[in-house]
Amino acid sequence: MSVSRPRLFARVTVPAAVAVLTVLATTATPAGAARPTTDGGLFLTVSDAQHTWIRGIRLVCPDSRGDHPHGRAACDALTWARGDLNALRGEPHACTKEYDPVTVAATGTWRGGPVEWHKDFPSACTMDSATGPVFRF
Image (tube, helix red, strand yellow):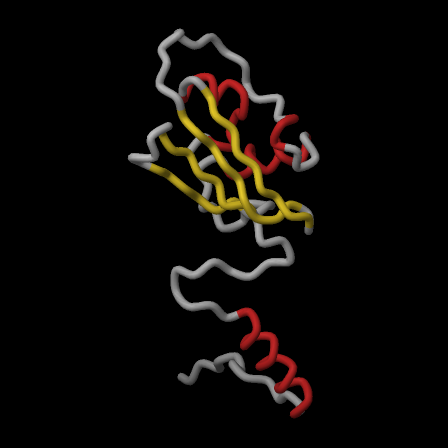
């Protein structure tokens, strides 16, 4: 008994094939590389005051790649603030008065406009309270 199999390839005209190859060539990226987007996204960093350690992550909204552990919430917060990191409403909560300063920074683009921003906070808790999910990585 023979089983009919669906055709895997369809006939394509030469111009259509060239168009498909062109699209594939312009969107293909090496393994592990960030995919190009119309908005390059933001590179977010958190470091201690002496810069003895630093953490960083790329956030592209909508966070379709899932690089940021709270990407969707971070994108929502930035959208609400219209990309103004000083206007983030954060998630206010009580913090101890321990002084262990951190510096946060964001560089890149938001909705096509350049972003170059940094701010110092007295502790990671106060940073989290002020910025919510954006720098929570």
